[in-house]
Image (tube, rainbow, N blue to C red):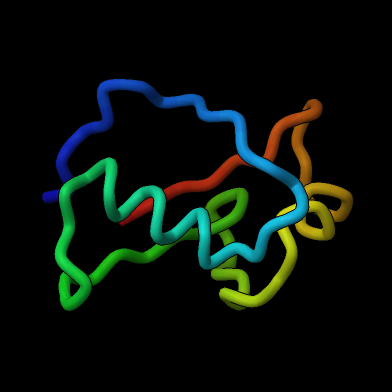
Length: 71
């Protein structure tokens, strides 16, 4: 029962920890800090919030994109 995003593709800095992605999506979805939000890379696993986006991209990009699913 997650609200839909108006935009489904975003550019982000590769030099930030994954928690910035979580915070950004929380803001876009208008979620409160206590609302559950689960993010999965390529639909398979949740990265640690301190993993760098650049490192995740290097290991898990799909056709040049870091695909993040949320529930």
